[in-house]
Image 1 (cartoon, rainbow, N blue to C red):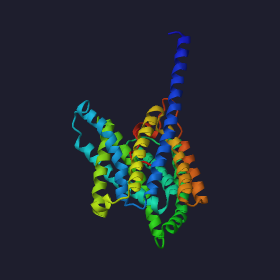
Image 2: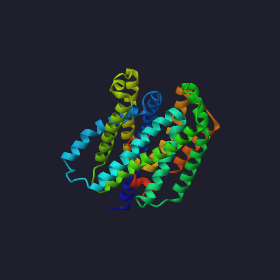
Image 3: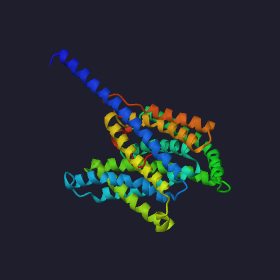
Image 4: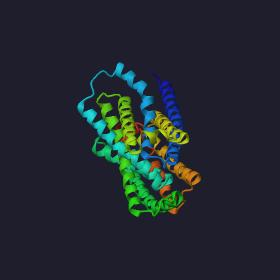
Length: 342
């Protein structure tokens, strides 16, 4: 091959790569918008039983992955899933059961504008921890700086949680607010972020053992749907489930559909331009959630909220795409996002 042909080939590869990054960025941006729509629907359903809401959030994921799951089972995936893989998938599913419940509770206690950036920051920080200790990945200076900014953002946002809770208590007329409840809600959000991230890590680990990624997603969605349905039936009874107003059912079902669509879009974007790049795009979720919370639910605009959201965006933006051939901590380890990540 001549030097001229080599130059042309390199230019073509670079153009192809840039095209993937552009289209991946667009798809990732659309995924962030769809996830915001899902979270807005969840915020609209905070007056409903949280377990019943979580059931409708989880069901579309199980339904939409059923066909590809059966395709893999009948085709290339004929090996038995090991006991350790089953244990790992079921363990993180139990964690995500708690995470989904706490996120829904938090939407009713501190609001959409605060819950999303706190959870998003917690997911990324947890991802770095899991990448380091569970998957043996190294932490670069760039990621350490981003994590420091994200932890600061979570700290700042936490100061605004009390104001948000006061506003929601006045809106819902639920009696005296409890600072302890606000603190416990924030702790619950931190654990929720960890649970969402752990699902993605577990699915990736089992994928390295030969288990198709769709298998882990399907198992997670089915187990969550069944568990949430049973718990909701215990809490509100079958009559309560059947008497749910049609408008509430439509909102909850929309949240589930948007959640599944957002997962598919973000997964597609990650495959096109990498996890770190998509995480930077996902920073827009913080701004969009804050905007939706203020416009649609009259949540308070405070200096803590504004500064915290800006820090969250900055922290995720610092995790920009690394140079070709130098993947960062989470690109290979957590190539699939958690299904429930908001």
